[in-house]
Length: 194
Ligand SMILES: [Zn+2]
Ligand SMILES: [Zn+2]
Picture 1 (cartoon, rainbow, N blue to C red):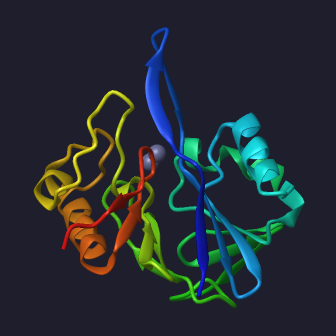
Picture 2 (cartoon, helix red, strand yellow):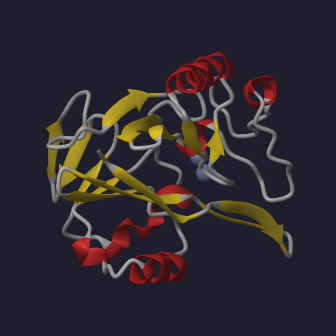
């Protein structure tokens, strides 16, 4: 069984007329590897969150990116020598290595979930509590929004950054079907009502 920990709950708000945002960051322990999902853009917060777990950036084996928005990826600068993965490629220095289905050498399933961004992928992890899905921005809320998690509200929730509405809706439905718990890109983790 894998272990999933939310290191940082993502946020998105306005401060003095500027948008301020950093993504949820998640630590997965699976098959002896430590996988960090979406390192975010707040460097101090990430370093502190890792410290609280007794970890330094160098202890992370793999960094996985759900998609390429900078508020999710800027902190890859803390991991200059690590494998950086998106939904189907491993970037190792200048090498680009294809993979399919699962994060290599783990049981973590990669699920294409386009809509918010075309390259967007989510992760499904089997844990003792059930299937946890790290959903990136398939589900996310600004700090000033109420996080309603009944399925109707989840499917209808507006994403001001969506690239393709029909794809986003299909991705949301796909994740709600397989997940017991969903970790959102900005906002809280929630239980899926069945
Ligand atoms: Zn985001
Ligand atoms: Zn995004």
